[in-house]
Image 1: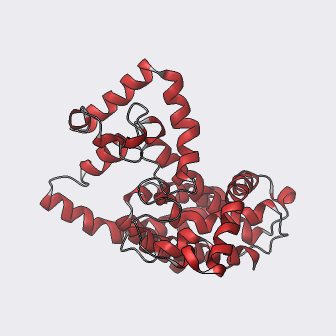
Image 2 (image 1 turned 180 degrees about the vertical axis):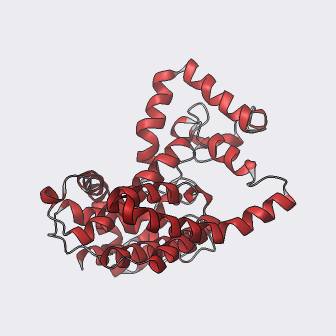
Image 3 (image 1 turned 90 degrees about the vertical axis):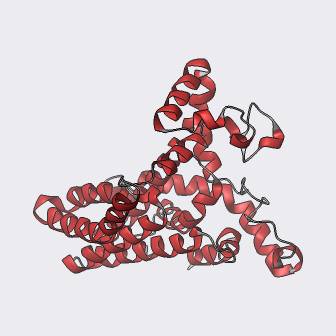
Length: 306
């Protein structure tokens, strides 16, 4: 109940619904995916495994960053249920994923001559090479450093050129870029402020909002702002302890799948964006999954639901 209330009060989730962006649809599909996994955890069936794959395929069409997650989830199901059951569940899940994704891959092969548009990968890696999202520390470049970089066109020419640039930067300033990729990128991804936009919870500039004048909205906004970093830290703790032996974390076996699914999804998403561009708006659709992990950290005796 408490975690559901925190999701309902999240300014980022509320505001994102007012924009015509992929965040809203991707959030719906990932929450639907979590709900299907929770049902699967209570009663396993091949049909529910197939639907999980279909939902993941649909979410991947919205956000390609989820592309590798089905393989990770398939390996986890093998680990969780053992080979005898796990290979069947993993198999039908991957079939459902392929049924949705392969027609789009076929379309790309016909129109682009490649399975995916490499420009998306190049831009994703390119936009993440600038420490603190600034070009040479210039404050005016915050959020859009590639627009201020005179060498941006050369860097973003193709995958080879952007990988070469990343390698050169690590050679020239190894400590700075190691810190940026390993520590600061995850922190920026889960930051409160939307860097590429108006700031705070707003992506596009707005002239008016209930958060500016409505007392109830202002109070809930302040509450969520104060709780933001404690929630992040406790969710991180929950992500880690979900992998402890069952007897040590106080979860019933049927809920262990849900707990570890949330942990896998959050860790995967954080790792992917630590490699590329960790803009905070990309984390908004995954924020509902922070709160189940928060609940894990309080060891709710297996009564966890999504």
